[in-house]
Image (tube, rainbow, N blue to C red; front, side, top):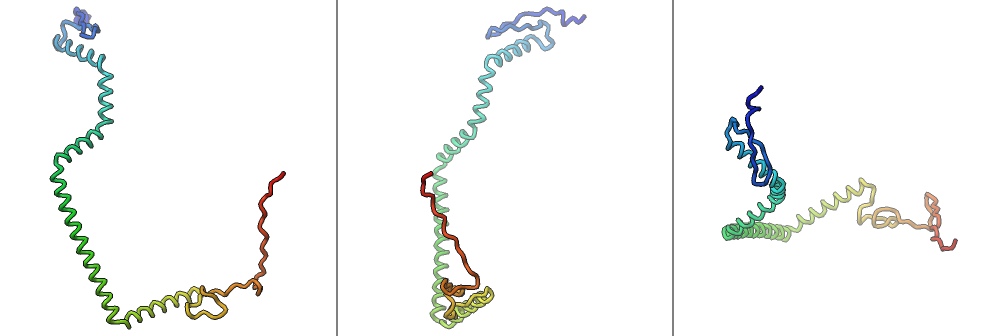
Length: 181
Protein backbone atom coordinates (compact mmCIF):
# COMPACT_ATOMS: atom_id res chain seq x y z
CA UNK A 1 0.00 0.00 0.00
CA UNK A 2 1.28 3.44 -0.94
CA UNK A 3 2.10 5.53 2.11
CA UNK A 4 1.56 8.87 0.36
CA UNK A 5 -2.06 7.94 -0.21
CA UNK A 6 -2.38 7.16 3.47
CA UNK A 7 -0.83 10.48 4.52
CA UNK A 8 -3.16 12.69 6.54
CA UNK A 9 -4.84 15.44 4.55
CA UNK A 10 -5.91 18.76 5.86
CA UNK A 11 -8.69 21.04 4.79
CA UNK A 12 -7.71 24.37 3.22
CA UNK A 13 -10.37 27.08 3.04
CA UNK A 14 -9.76 29.81 0.43
CA UNK A 15 -10.91 33.42 0.79
CA UNK A 16 -13.79 32.63 -1.61
CA UNK A 17 -15.09 29.93 0.68
CA UNK A 18 -14.14 26.91 -1.42
CA UNK A 19 -12.59 23.96 0.35
CA UNK A 20 -9.60 22.11 -1.00
CA UNK A 21 -7.82 19.17 0.56
CA UNK A 22 -4.09 19.28 0.61
CA UNK A 23 -1.68 16.68 1.78
CA UNK A 24 0.45 17.84 4.65
CA UNK A 25 3.37 15.93 3.28
CA UNK A 26 3.48 17.36 -0.28
CA UNK A 27 6.81 16.81 -2.01
CA UNK A 28 6.97 20.52 -2.96
CA UNK A 29 5.94 21.86 0.39
CA UNK A 30 2.85 23.39 1.87
CA UNK A 31 3.46 26.84 0.27
CA UNK A 32 3.09 25.28 -3.19
CA UNK A 33 -0.21 23.65 -2.29
CA UNK A 34 -1.53 26.84 -0.80
CA UNK A 35 -0.45 28.99 -3.79
CA UNK A 36 -1.91 26.48 -6.22
CA UNK A 37 -5.17 26.45 -4.32
CA UNK A 38 -5.23 30.25 -4.14
CA UNK A 39 -4.53 30.53 -7.89
CA UNK A 40 -7.32 28.10 -8.74
CA UNK A 41 -9.70 29.93 -6.45
CA UNK A 42 -8.82 33.23 -8.15
CA UNK A 43 -9.45 31.72 -11.59
CA UNK A 44 -12.73 30.19 -10.45
CA UNK A 45 -13.89 33.55 -9.18
CA UNK A 46 -12.55 35.97 -11.82
CA UNK A 47 -11.89 33.73 -14.85
CA UNK A 48 -14.77 34.98 -16.97
CA UNK A 49 -13.81 38.59 -16.29
CA UNK A 50 -10.24 37.88 -17.33
CA UNK A 51 -11.43 36.17 -20.52
CA UNK A 52 -13.79 39.07 -21.33
CA UNK A 53 -10.92 41.53 -20.78
CA UNK A 54 -8.66 39.61 -23.18
CA UNK A 55 -11.35 39.47 -25.88
CA UNK A 56 -12.21 43.16 -25.46
CA UNK A 57 -8.55 44.11 -25.63
CA UNK A 58 -8.05 42.11 -28.83
CA UNK A 59 -10.99 43.90 -30.45
CA UNK A 60 -10.03 47.35 -29.21
CA UNK A 61 -6.28 47.09 -29.90
CA UNK A 62 -6.39 48.58 -33.46
CA UNK A 63 -8.43 51.56 -32.22
CA UNK A 64 -6.08 52.07 -29.30
CA UNK A 65 -3.06 51.95 -31.64
CA UNK A 66 -4.62 54.57 -33.95
CA UNK A 67 -5.40 56.75 -30.93
CA UNK A 68 -1.81 56.43 -29.66
CA UNK A 69 -0.47 57.26 -33.12
CA UNK A 70 -2.69 60.35 -33.30
CA UNK A 71 -1.41 61.51 -29.91
CA UNK A 72 2.17 60.92 -31.04
CA UNK A 73 1.54 62.89 -34.23
CA UNK A 74 0.12 65.75 -32.20
CA UNK A 75 3.19 65.73 -29.99
CA UNK A 76 5.47 65.78 -33.03
CA UNK A 77 3.10 67.98 -35.03
CA UNK A 78 5.34 70.99 -35.49
CA UNK A 79 8.14 68.92 -37.04
CA UNK A 80 5.63 67.17 -39.32
CA UNK A 81 4.10 70.48 -40.42
CA UNK A 82 7.52 71.89 -41.27
CA UNK A 83 8.42 68.79 -43.25
CA UNK A 84 5.09 68.89 -45.13
CA UNK A 85 5.54 72.59 -45.87
CA UNK A 86 9.02 71.90 -47.31
CA UNK A 87 7.63 69.06 -49.44
CA UNK A 88 4.82 71.32 -50.67
CA UNK A 89 7.31 74.01 -51.67
CA UNK A 90 9.42 71.45 -53.54
CA UNK A 91 6.35 70.07 -55.36
CA UNK A 92 5.28 73.58 -56.32
CA UNK A 93 8.75 74.35 -57.72
CA UNK A 94 8.67 71.16 -59.80
CA UNK A 95 5.20 72.08 -61.12
CA UNK A 96 6.39 75.56 -62.06
CA UNK A 97 9.43 74.17 -63.90
CA UNK A 98 7.25 71.71 -65.81
CA UNK A 99 4.74 74.43 -66.71
CA UNK A 100 7.52 76.74 -67.91
CA UNK A 101 9.04 73.96 -70.03
CA UNK A 102 5.63 73.23 -71.53
CA UNK A 103 4.97 76.90 -72.31
CA UNK A 104 8.42 77.22 -73.86
CA UNK A 105 7.79 74.19 -76.09
CA UNK A 106 4.38 75.53 -77.14
CA UNK A 107 5.92 78.88 -78.08
CA UNK A 108 8.64 77.15 -80.09
CA UNK A 109 6.07 75.14 -82.03
CA UNK A 110 3.97 78.25 -82.71
CA UNK A 111 7.06 80.09 -83.97
CA UNK A 112 7.94 77.19 -86.25
CA UNK A 113 4.42 77.21 -87.69
CA UNK A 114 4.55 80.96 -88.25
CA UNK A 115 8.03 80.86 -89.79
CA UNK A 116 7.41 77.82 -91.98
CA UNK A 117 3.75 77.69 -93.12
CA UNK A 118 4.61 75.38 -96.03
CA UNK A 119 5.64 72.65 -93.58
CA UNK A 120 2.27 72.77 -91.83
CA UNK A 121 0.57 72.65 -95.25
CA UNK A 122 2.65 69.61 -96.21
CA UNK A 123 1.71 67.97 -92.92
CA UNK A 124 -1.98 68.73 -93.55
CA UNK A 125 -1.81 67.32 -97.09
CA UNK A 126 -0.07 64.17 -95.85
CA UNK A 127 -2.78 63.61 -93.24
CA UNK A 128 -5.54 64.13 -95.81
CA UNK A 129 -3.90 61.58 -98.10
CA UNK A 130 -3.76 59.06 -95.24
CA UNK A 131 -7.44 59.64 -94.51
CA UNK A 132 -8.36 59.25 -98.18
CA UNK A 133 -6.34 56.03 -98.41
CA UNK A 134 -8.20 54.62 -95.40
CA UNK A 135 -11.54 55.65 -96.90
CA UNK A 136 -10.64 53.91 -100.18
CA UNK A 137 -9.76 50.72 -98.27
CA UNK A 138 -13.16 50.84 -96.56
CA UNK A 139 -14.95 51.46 -99.86
CA UNK A 140 -16.04 55.00 -99.04
CA UNK A 141 -15.72 58.08 -101.17
CA UNK A 142 -13.12 60.50 -99.83
CA UNK A 143 -14.40 63.85 -98.65
CA UNK A 144 -14.51 66.55 -101.23
CA UNK A 145 -14.82 64.02 -104.09
CA UNK A 146 -18.45 63.06 -103.57
CA UNK A 147 -20.57 62.75 -106.69
CA UNK A 148 -24.09 64.04 -107.08
CA UNK A 149 -25.69 60.69 -106.33
CA UNK A 150 -23.97 60.13 -102.99
CA UNK A 151 -24.33 61.94 -99.72
CA UNK A 152 -21.71 63.25 -97.29
CA UNK A 153 -20.89 59.90 -95.75
CA UNK A 154 -20.04 58.21 -99.07
CA UNK A 155 -23.15 56.02 -99.34
CA UNK A 156 -25.75 56.51 -102.05
CA UNK A 157 -28.69 58.55 -100.91
CA UNK A 158 -31.87 56.69 -100.10
CA UNK A 159 -34.98 57.75 -101.96
CA UNK A 160 -38.04 55.63 -101.15
CA UNK A 161 -39.88 56.75 -104.32
CA UNK A 162 -37.16 55.42 -106.61
CA UNK A 163 -37.55 51.84 -105.49
CA UNK A 164 -34.49 49.79 -104.98
CA UNK A 165 -32.80 46.47 -105.45
CA UNK A 166 -34.60 44.94 -102.48
CA UNK A 167 -38.32 45.43 -102.06
CA UNK A 168 -39.01 46.56 -98.55
CA UNK A 169 -42.15 45.64 -96.72
CA UNK A 170 -42.68 47.00 -93.28
CA UNK A 171 -45.48 45.88 -91.07
CA UNK A 172 -47.52 48.50 -89.32
CA UNK A 173 -46.86 49.10 -85.66
CA UNK A 174 -48.96 47.12 -83.26
CA UNK A 175 -51.51 49.35 -81.67
CA UNK A 176 -51.66 49.61 -77.93
CA UNK A 177 -54.59 47.86 -76.26
CA UNK A 178 -57.52 50.17 -75.75
CA UNK A 179 -58.84 48.62 -72.61
CA UNK A 180 -62.10 46.82 -72.27
CA UNK A 181 -62.47 43.13 -71.88
